[in-house]
Every structure is written in C-alpha cells, then in structure tokens.
Amino acid sequence: MNQSKVFSYVGFCKRADKITYGSYSIGALKSSVYLLILSGEAAKNTRRFAIKYKNIFSCPVILCKRDFDKIADKPQCKLVAIRDKNLAEAILNCKDDNFELFGGGKDI
Image 1 (cartoon, rainbow, N blue to C red):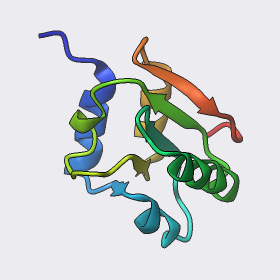
Image 2 (cartoon, rainbow, N blue to C red):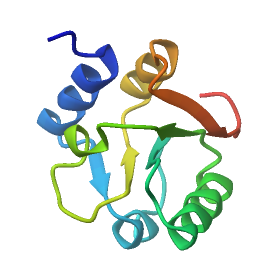
Image 3 (cartoon, helix red, strand yellow):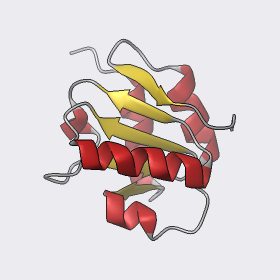
C-alpha cells in the first residue's frame, strides 16, 4: 500500500501532540496554527469555520478529497489544525492529488 507522505507527517503531528481536532477546539486556540486540513465531505458550515479560522490565524487551508479518516481518528471530525510550523511546511510541500489548496493565507 502506497501511503502519502502527508499522512506520515500528520502522524508525526499526532505523536508530538501538535494537532487539534474539530471546529470548536480550533476556535478555542489563541495562536500558533500553521495549517488547516478540511475534509472534502465537510458541510457548508464547517467550510465557513475553515475560512473564518484561515483569516484569524493567517494560515492556508488544504482540502483532503478522500481518506480524511486516516488524518482525523475521531468520528464526525471534518477539520483539523496543525500547530507545528515545520510539519505544516512539509505537508504543504509534499501534498499530492488527494489534496488541494482551499484557501490562501500568508506564507509560513
């Protein structure tokens, strides 16, 4: 099975406890969000949250078209935040066909 490097980097974030799951948990953060990953199956309201948090944290948002359940191990979670700058850069640099840039933000 050929696993994307993005999933490996997200696994590193999980081990380092540098990932936050869910819209409301992300909203409680004060700073240091460097990347948001949004599920392709997310509802319109969750997409609005992603755009809102993109503007608040000035970070990019990438859309995961499939296999988002490998990123978010929690049921019904459609948005995650990466809180490590180096891992966020690595994820952005190695994204494949499964991921596309959903929104801009200033460069990290």
